[in-house]
Length: 127
Image (cartoon, rainbow, N blue to C red; front, side, top):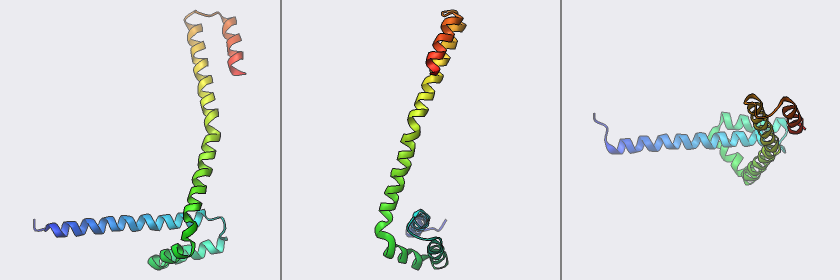
């Protein structure tokens, strides 16, 4: 077991450096696809540059288009949040309707309400 402490530190440094590099590479690639102001050929060119010459491609992309990467990411997050907010009330409402119906079914099953009361309450809940 001859693995000195400095070698372990160096290995960890290289591993985390590799993870950082992969994060930056995927961030740039996702920004290329997220950009709406680049044509299809422009996206293909940037993607080719990033894949064939990764270090130079990523550096060139961040130099030329890096200033607006954060703006595109923020716009994408806001668009996703707006979509989520748009769907959320209907999901809450449908859960509320399902809960109400389950309570009504339990009340009818236990004999606490009659069939007419159940039908009346059901029509009120579903409308």
